[in-house]
Image (cartoon, rainbow, N blue to C red; front, side, top):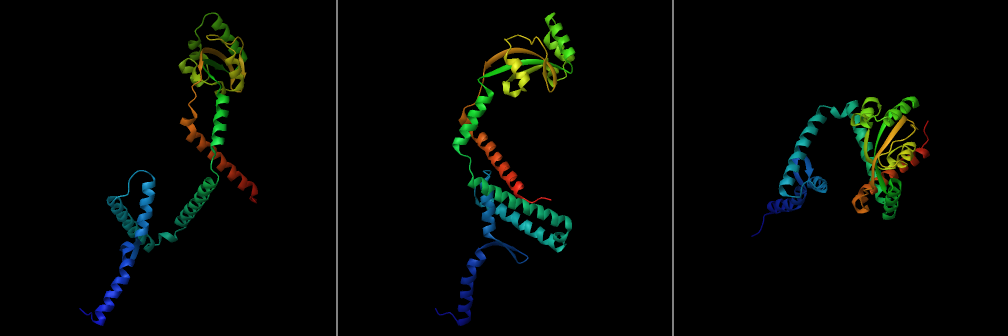
Length: 259
């Protein structure tokens, strides 16, 4: 069968235009929504691990993009894009997107090494030590008050009762109970006095710190429970990466001419 010239031209135009039409999932008031845009959103959603790529997901995203296009066209028609507050918000969003892209690139080019993670973990273990201490304390503003409390304890008063009645610390309601913690959790003066005590003993003299005067009782001691590196590796890596980013920001601030 021979096609007439007019029909042949129409057939050729249809063949040429078909791929172009296939590149768009819809048009809204003659504004095309590219299929590539759907693909991009699908990748983002799938990357978040919440859903898998499926026809249902793609259809939902397509409907959402159509609705957004309808809304943005109406917002543009009403001139919202020219409002000063909207322009300011757009500029803030633009800056955030560009900055986040730069920082993500910095992280990619400056990854945290396994050796750094191991060194940080070993440093943490050394700071924590191999023991944990269960202590109570009574915190008062003056040395005289602390001495008076020690005298009452030596006379047979109950530590928990005096803590509830006299301590200015948040642990007072629990009888001064500080629960289990490593010495590194406390200020140096407190830690030194605490680790020097025998189980069940109370400090003979007030312990001065930046917070006031402490009377300390050591309830018990046990081996420290430090999780293995494998359990905290990701957490340590993220902490080190944040430090790298902070150092990067500070270096840029130093170089900047700020008046």
